[in-house]
Image 1 (tube, rainbow, N blue to C red):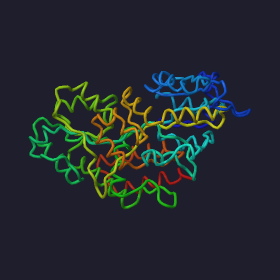
Image 2: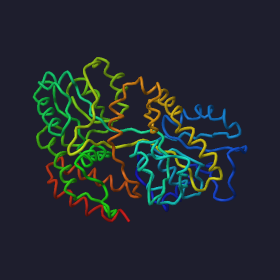
Image 3: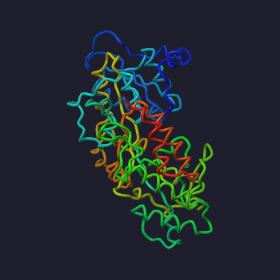
Image 4: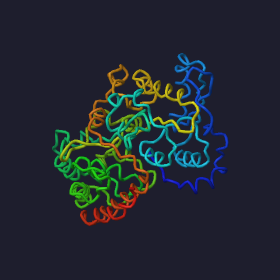
Length: 414
């Protein structure tokens, strides 16, 4: 998750307006041990912010002297508040950080490196861990993850003469063409034609084509042969009239069209399982979620949040212990039971709450997921991808657009 970035200069100007005078980090003084009486300040976003303080009560059974003070913050203002607090040196001790924000805050110099003897990379999904890693240091511990899978109407696929789930790009395109012939179908696939966040649907094509966002030299690789292949495959759905070639209207809810059969396929995250169950109960037994169809290799993206400790904190030991608690397999399984957020700790998937849930498709996708590198200017880069996809949907040449995107973004990575 991510929002538009603000420069530190802008952030300083708006600190007072955001009311950040009560934030709790400190840039001076010594460190306090985890066994000392203290208050640990934590910023958490969205639903997590509303629930995490309750979970902290179990943490206090082992660390009764650490009072965990949680400030819930809406995702819509979280990025702005964090950047502004960094500018004013008023960050909390630790926070939940969206997966694509890490690079920016590393660049600001406000994150404390993770003690790699306290947290092991092998405990987590590889892409989740790597998304926090830069220049040999790790700056966040994965907390929960999400990924992208394909949702499709199995009943309509059977009507169209397709009995098996699509496993490859060719399978997927063939299914879309078959579904388009049904009288109920308006668009075979909901595929973003640009607009904010469209990059999340295109990156799996890049990774599945065998491409990466950065080459071994650290430079962006949007004009690589693999990127051109990904743009070409993505464009087929618009060129063939299988997907709408203009961005969706704000607030568009694909589930309504999915339930009515007007749009029988879309790619999205794990939260859609419950949304379909709640909003389209008539579809029980008539849909499935499967791994994204593969090009050269199976691939998806990874999202979610990590837990970070700020360098200004005087309570790093307590922050480390609370991070250990929140990323422990048992705690993560309990958190899934409460919030349905997928655990980043792989061992948690063996706990009863996960072992008895229908989440195998997401585990497969997470195993094949590729990270977004922690790039300081990711928000600007992502915006340029979105703009490129809008041009692509309107008939733009994939190779030419790849070169244009490379030229626009090549100065955004130091």
